[in-house]
Amino acid sequence: MLEKGGRPQASDLVTPDEAIKDPYFLEFLNLKDEYSESHLEDALIHRLEDFLLELGGDFTFVERQRRLRIGETWFRVDPLFFHRRLRCLIIIDLKLTELSHADVGQMRMYCNYAREHWTLPGENPPVGLILCARTNAAVARTD
Image (cartoon, rainbow, N blue to C red; front, side, top):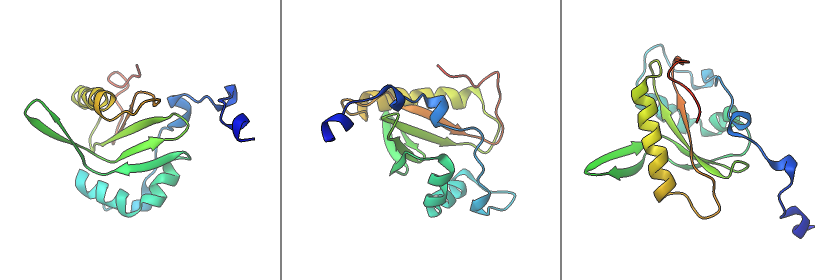
């Protein structure tokens, strides 16, 4: 049984579009009308179990505010997760405004860094997930 279970099956395959839903509803955080990104992240971490349930199965929490250095500049990644079926890191960036090209560029930079420095052998490339107040369809697209 263990040998058979260790072999991937066609039914095991899942795409990021299937594994990551849109939209997410975060009313369980009970935030007031105005809050900062750091307050949003604090609330998500405080209610991590509820957030994981909203994200869906197969998400596991890795780290909060993971630091990375590009050149001489330090950055921090908002919550970092791993998706078991996708076998990849999920980098989450929290934005309180409409999605912008700068947000997409920043996420691309994070994913490139994570691919090079954080991805372990056998894992797939990281997936970036920007949780924002409003989507801009002209700016948001998948590669």
